[in-house]
Image 1 (cartoon, rainbow, N blue to C red):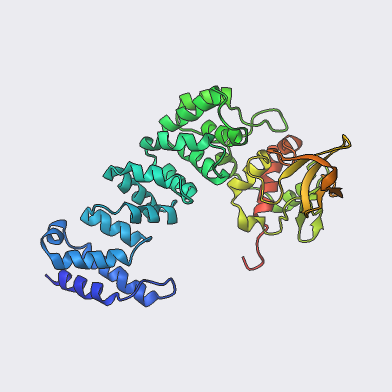
Image 2 (spheres, rainbow, N blue to C red):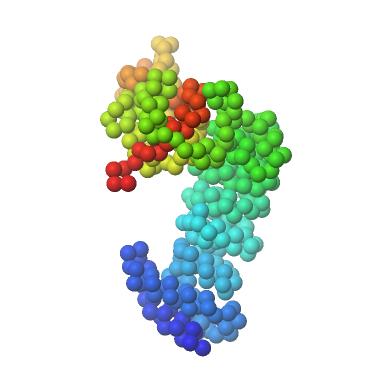
Length: 371
């Protein structure tokens, strides 16, 4: 049985954990996995030497597709931790998705629920969305309404729910009961108005309508907008237009006002989908350091803007015009972080749909110089 011999030799030759740059070691590991997966499960179960070889290669394949290949091929049990590692590392890859499916199929759903409370929750929620397992609906639904969880986890949980009919119904129920958080309503509207089930689409259009454009007609879902082609040059003109005010708050390569996040490399940081969401629902995911603050002064006056700086004695607030005012802490009655963004909603009502597409095309083109 030549493949058994090759497998044993290859497994033995993989002497150390694989490093990303160690392509020779990776090739040995890939060859070992290829050799092992040419055997049937019966051979594995009957031969301790093969079992030992599989375990050696399995240990050196943690977090990679090879780990999933071995678990699947030999129907290995008690591999939940390793499979969840792959799902978290590769949530949008076929092996990451298969990893989460293998865990669910094993019946170890308690580990999945536990992992959704960990720092990997956002990535695991993404993997569950791609897996489209309706069994995950009761695990994901509480994440959407839990305001103690980070925004990325809640948004990925919402997207994941929208991938199954049961999950979409759960989102509609939250909306009907007014339990859907304000900063997730646009995302829910965009996902559900693009759902593949006509009944879900119909109800979503009633209780979660998409934002209206310049002509007062609802815009297409983001999933449709990203398919449209824009004109970069025209988008740059829209960005600089007084009506849109983009350049009054954002800088691009030194041009514009330093109020909101700089956008010189925004096309490298965000895909088109996220750019549309940031424009159409600016309060959904405010960048760290650009949160709006409401400051009540003991004098009865107030200030509103982002924190430019703060010390033990004073807080500096930058308003929407970019003006910084410093307030002594002794003069402040209260301060609270706002859920809304300093960027106003409704930009899409100042432009045509094509101009919106052009604007996003322009923003997507703003990348690092080496890209």
